[in-house]
Each structure stands twice: as structure tokens, then as C-alpha cells.
Image (cartoon, rainbow, N blue to C red; front, side, top):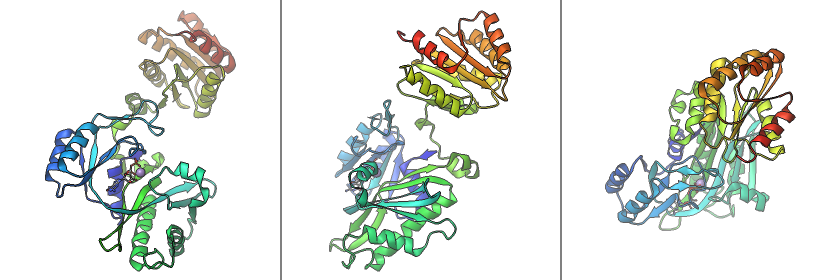
Length: 404
Ligand code: GDP
Ligand code: MN
């Protein structure tokens, strides 16, 4: 589960990481109130959506006066941010965060992830902060350092020194991380905050981009701040963290996905396709989507009804698929292992009668009681195409929806 920037900052601040003063506003009235009461004229208005790249998309605005701030806030509510990270349908801004401005001397990149190669936590650091790290990695891989932390002995001082040395331009300079005790302590505190928060809260990713260094009027080191923060959590561990679960923002999730979650269906809506899929098992669902693409069309969703699919869940799954207006045909692909194909067939028949499915339906049943299942489908008189294997099924659904 993702949380917003302001929520991530709050979490990390609880572990001692320094953040700037900021206030959340959920509509323009709240925003005007915050701006009106803000001490000082300069502030940053930041769109709160679950996606990065807001800066380039106009979702981060630096206001030099309150009048400018009012204008930026007014324009930001309702604005759609569309980029690589939001997908084609984009994200509409319904919350903004209003934060103090700082004079940035340097922007760094610092994140903590789970490294799949070593199965350990791993810091990723770079002096190229504020840019998209994927692009930096491609263009200049040497500008990125990975520091793997062995989970048996945990985070040690030498890990922090490694990070500090790498972030320094010139370690001999009195204002470097390595020479300046104050600056090293600031970094140490942030690295430890991120690490402790990650472990305590069962995070799966924490990304600070940029982590900024500020200076005073004399050009001396002034402090390090988390200017941006992104956090993602391990969904399987959320039951242990009610305080994190409470941060869930339904505005950020598709309505159909919320409805599906209530019935323990694994449903993910996809942007571009027109073939609705209902499959039991995640692997089979992936294979089904591949097969649809192979025959030249696109799936409209990923839907795994799970191993213990019941009649109710099958009904609900069909309703959810059909509520997507882009869906022009449905492919049901069920392998009966624990679940019995005759039960699934009955559920399909009942659902199709209740919902009155008007678009083409292709069903492939295989495994336990598939003969009985196919007989039930045949006898029902419902307009559907029954296919014996996945290849046929995918070819059929692509063919009959070609011109729809
Ligand atoms: P993102 O584009 O979604 O990753 O949003 P960020 O929160 O990272 O903001 C993008 C950029 O805006 C940062 O890299 C900074 O360069 C700039 N920015 C954000 N807040 C401030 C601020 O207080 N002062 C200054 N000078 N720049 C800021
Ligand atoms: Mn950022």
C-alpha cells in the first residue's frame, strides 16, 4: 500500500528525520485558510497524488507571495497529472500540501529497498538528487551506490560512513559529510530514521528524492531535510499496523478495485484493453492475459477469483468486469483443482441470467468435473462459446470482439 508524501514525512519524522513545516488542505477553502495564516510570504504548493514526477507535470509550485500561492492552489485542485508513473488515465489532484520553502544548496537521492538479489535491505544513494533515479541509473550507473545491510548484524556506523563518503564531492573540504561532525550527524540521524521506520512498519520501500542540504547566509552547513518522501508497505503485514492501514486513501484507488477487495478478489483494472478476464489463480491469470495479447488484443483487467472461488465471488467478479464500460467481451478461464467446474458453471449461468450479459462470453473449463460443467453451460441456453483449451479460448474471444 502506498501512502502520500505528507503521510510518509509524518511517519519518518516520528523516527527523528527532519521535515519542513507543512499543512494539508483537502479543498480550496482549507488551502486559502492555510495560506492566509501562513507565517511568511513564500511557500511551496504540492499536489498529493500517489505518483512521482509531479514537479515536471506542474504539481509542485513555488510561490513567492501569498497571492501567487492562492492562484497556484486554485489551479492545482482538479488538475490531472498524467505521466509514466500515473498511467494513461492520470491522477486527479484532490489534496495539496503547503510547505515552507528552503534555499537548496544540494539535492541528494536516498532510498531503502529490499534487494531481491541478496534478500537484504539495501540503501541506494546518489548525488544526482531530484531527478528520476531510473534515468540516472541508465545514463550514469557509477553515480549510484548500493549499500546492502546484513539483516543479522543490522545497520552499523560503517554503512553510514560509506554513504557519507559517496555523497561527498570532496572529503577534504571542511563542509563535507566526513569532515563536518554536524553534517555527518544529520545524515546519520536520517539514515537511521529510515532504517528503523522501514523495519518497524514493515515497509517495502522508502524513497527520499530529493534529500536536500541547506546553507546559512555565510555559506555554512545549515541542515538536511526530507523534501520529498515516498513510502510503500508490504500489504501482507498491514494487519499488524492499524495506524498504517488507516492512512489508506480511497481517492487513489479505482472504485472497482475497492469493491473487488471486499469480496477478496484480486482485481486490477488495466488502461487500454477491451477483454475482461475472470481466472482462478494468479499464474493462470497472467498466462491468460499473455494469450490474449498473443492473439492481438489487450486484456481490460487482471482478475484472480482465488482458489476457493464460491458462487457469490464468481457473481461479484462478473458484475465488476461488466461495470467497466471498456469491456467488449469476457473470457472466463477456470482450472478446477480444489474448485469444481460444475459449481463454477452454475454460478456463471446464474450470474449471466441475473445480470443479462449482452457481450460475447467465452468459457474454458478444465480439471475437476469439467464435463459436468460444460453440460450445465450447454443446457442453460445462454449465449456463450465454450472452448476446450486456453489457446482456442483466447483466439475465440479475440475474434468475436474484433470489431466491437
Ligand atoms: P516530484 O517531482 O513528484 O518528485 O516532487 P518533489 O517533491 O521531489 O519536488 C520536485 C522538485 O521541486 C524538487 O526536486 C525541488 O527541486 C523542487 N522543490 C520542492 N520544494 C522546494 C523548496 O522548498 N525550495 C526549492 N527551492 N525547491 C523546491
Ligand atoms: Mn521527488
